[in-house]
Image (tube, rainbow, N blue to C red; front, side, top):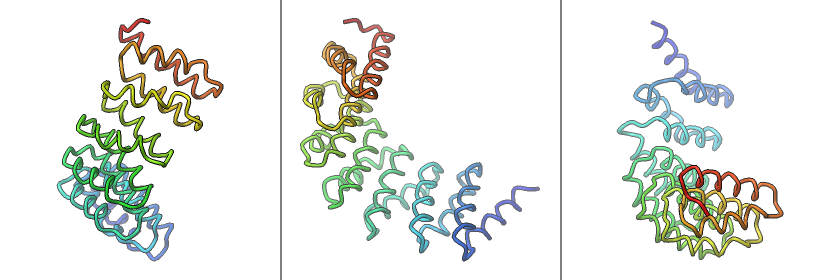
Length: 227
């Protein structure tokens, strides 16, 4: 008998004029089933607080119902706030609904904000669909270093072995996070080229890069790949 009372209390919190109440209300939806949570999340999808909106959008991504996908696509395609569009792109990745492939590709090519394009590239990796290859290769040619990070990670996620030469050119990238993403991605691409590059990255001057390379080497060796 407690569940309806809890939902009623959460609804009251979400309708409160107090920002802290609304944030607490969203946080308490964590253990609520998606079909009960989504109608409550919708109450604050257009909240005046960007913090509340961001949290609500994230919640939609981890509460899959029939409504979650169209709500997120609408936000991605139509919201005037780039932060909201980026959150929606990210949440579509969490949702792991393959229908999101086309909207995410469009967002990558058409949105003018780098944060939205970054989130779209990351989420294309989450979908683990090899069709994302062309988009991710385009991201590698971007002037934005953060897009290089996202694309390299996503190429690893979709296990795109054919693109290994394109990502290996970042083995000496100035940004250590790019090199770290490369070391992590190579752990998903079981080829001799991956092993050679990882042995090189294992000697990287940045400890997080070398550590990531060593972990990826162990993963490939456990999978039976020997140098």
